[in-house]
Image 1 (tube, rainbow, N blue to C red):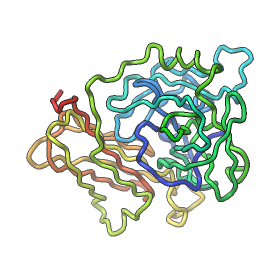
Image 2 (cartoon, rainbow, N blue to C red):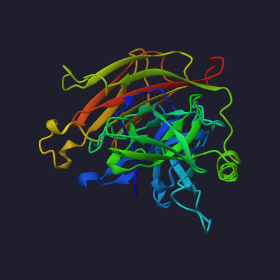
Image 3 (tube, rainbow, N blue to C red):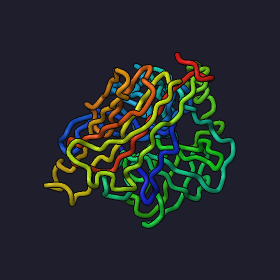
Length: 353
């Protein structure tokens, strides 16, 4: 399986509808739930990714969008473009739809673009350079693109230019209008120099399949439910751990009284800089964090935190107390780059649920 990521790119928190596909694996002999590929939300309960990311439809997959609750892929919810087609080329048909077990409340799905611009914005949670396994941070880069077939878009790259690389297959390519052009599929020469390919998501070849598996039968948008960010911290750009004691990194944020729910998440790089590892060739380089939330002193609050995974942790609270909250991040194994995202939801007009 060929998985891709973005090298020579910039970290970002600007794409709420770009997520990670998580599944259980054992990198370096350490088992847990790790990022497999990237994906993008195209309907309230449908995400699309590269078909080669879900080669085992019976496997349990989790979907993560920053600042939202984790969601599983529904049973029998994987529809690959080539399934049931006798003469389908899996390379040029490298596209899959994932039906989620429940709609993503408050996130705006991404529409397809009807036009092909000369440049595109590639986005994904992958590695920042060849042979640097630091996937888990959302990154973006702008590249010139061109049509290279009825089903594919291509770009050329060298050692110093942005490119798709490891752990970003299925990541979106957006047009200048912010709409979806394609999904990362293939690259060449270990992301050093060559041609990168994105699978197009528009055109006669894909429209009937898209209607059947994305447009038809999808959950309707959550009427009247709004989502707003209350916390965006990118610690892939700054040394956030400098001077922090063993009690953990404390990040304050505010929750308004019209909020009906609160979700705070952390997504982090798979491994830290090898210079910080006791044995760089061992799994001692793997990063792991725990996330906790502290509510305002004026109210008692019940929040559920999922810290049993790797690469993401998520805390969610219903009817959060208004006031000053604190996200507490503690290092379980090594320290590395991470991003923290917090979102509250409310009913349109500010009424509580």
